[in-house]
Length: 67
Image 1 (cartoon, one colour):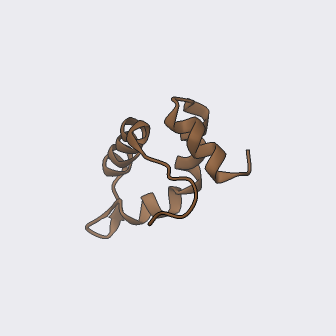
Image 2 (cartoon, helix red, strand yellow):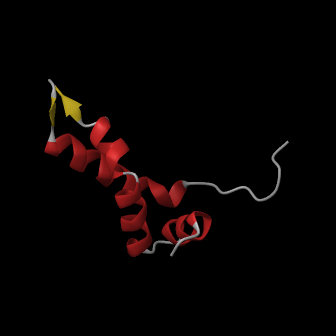
């Protein structure tokens, strides 16, 4: 699963493995935004990951050049 567009398409269709791949790929960024009071807040990190998991099915993919 190297092609990100294909991974994202699968995740949008409900493939949980693809969602996990995306979350793992973006974990450093998720961790960055999970810092609270100078430390990693595990609850905040889990909340962000849960929101990605819940909302990814609403993503829209556009093919070609958007105008």
